Image 1 (tube, rainbow, N blue to C red):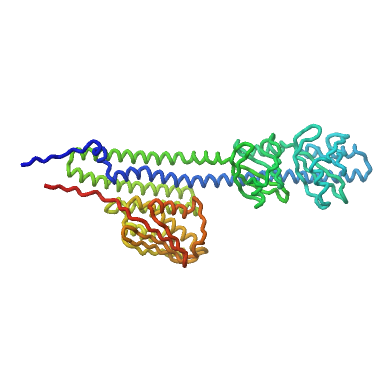
Image 2 (image 1 turned 180 degrees about the horizontal axis):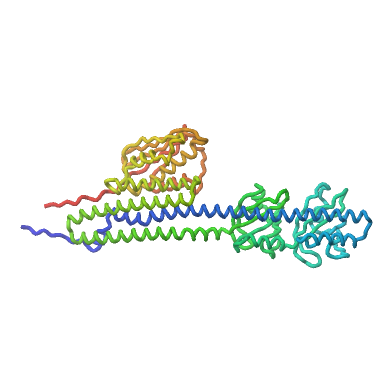
Amino acid sequence: MADTLVARPEPRARRAAGWSPALRMLMVGSIAIPLLLLLLWGERSWRIGEARAAEEARRNAELVREFALGVVRTQEAVLGHAADIAATVEGEGADGAVLHERLAALDAQTASVLSIVIVSPDGEIVASSRTHPVRIDVSDRSYFRELRDAQPADTGIRLDRLRLRPAGQDVIVASRRRPGPGFQGIVLSTIPVEAFTDFFGRIAADSHASASLLREDGLLLLRHDPDAPPVMLPPEVPSRQAIARADSGLYEAYALSDGVTRLYGYAKVADLPLYANFGVPLSTVRQTWLRGLLPVGGLLALAALLGCAAVLQAVQGVRAEVDRGLLEEARRRAEYQETLLRELHHRVKNSLMTVQALVRIRGGNTGADKVLQQRIMALGQVHDLLHVSEFVSRLDLSAFLRALCANPAVAPPEGGVTVHCDTDPVEVGVEQAVPLSLIVVELLTNALKHAFPSGRAGRITIGLRHIGDHACLSLRDDGVGLPPATQHGRRSGLWLVERLVGQIQGHLEIRRQGGTEFRLTFPLRLDQPPDAVGTGA
């Protein structure tokens, strides 16, 4: 009788013996799925942080606008009274001392005013509320020249920032023409810069936030820093481009003064050529986003570690069975691997449901939140079908499409749009199942959202055909059609579809006759089930 020799596996073969395709897939899934969930959650929380920063910027810009408007209206009243006083004193034939006394009395009634001044037509200060006599020539000042050369009907107030002579104090000057025929001179008041910057500092709780007043001609009059000088901004900077487009809104800009990138809200100050700005630093938005992301990331990392530990433990058990070389144990090993993979699919589905519930709890009712929920639902449906299938490494794609079409959450019956499936039985490997499910959900969601505007009824047909070693997946609607030159950014559904098509090495064709049709052709790469183990004599 001949002896039967059984060769023991080499050390390298022994090390690789435990890593069956199912366990490799389980290890990859334990890491990749929590990472995918973290990316989805991180994208949503970043959008929420951006929206909150935009709301803060708009709200505080309105506060700056209201404060500036109150100061300007006060100065308009003060300058009107001062012009009346000057006209009365001149009519009485009184001297400059009387004019000084009456201006001083008006000054005492206005807390925010530093001084009130009357300037003659030739640019000489003839009276001041603070000192008498005073003879200072201001004909070289830009505000005097512009008011002198303005039309007589132009009685609006003008704001400038300059240093007083001879004291050198940094002030805001509010000036306007004196009423009357011809040029009668001007009347002006001065306001300490701190009257504005103290208020700006109170509303800018973040040390890197910024409040400012920008004149329509590009002169940045004031910032939250009282020591910051006025700056004339060039036309190409984001702030000037923004105010040229609209009276209020948002823009993002890098501040050369302090090197901080901010999201700015701005608003025009009534009918004045003046804009209030408030900037929220994007670094603060990022820090808040990271603090909110860390707990979720920690939980998903723990889930990934536990999954990897379970896989490693399973590998050790499989290696022990290989060493014993028992046929029955080898069969049990295969069954155990399938059971582990089914359990993974079950647990991943539960995790997806938990994340979907978290999105609802956070109040996600926007279109982006609904798209996120549908993506999570599609992943859950894939794992549900894998859980009940005979081979957990394969997915019946036609069964998934039928289940998706029958789900009322995808296309509510009251919406007037019906979804029809016409599919051949096609099995795909599990590494193709997730990208394909997300592609179908993105295309179906886009069709429901854009192809049937204003409650229009219609029909969407999803087809699946087996063509040799390839398959063809189509989604056609009879809606309004896709524009010929559709542009899509990095966060759009079509951008995501293109990346997913690249993952499965597919080819996507778009047809625009009688609606829109997407045709995706992709190779079939089925995971092979574990080989049957046989014996021979």
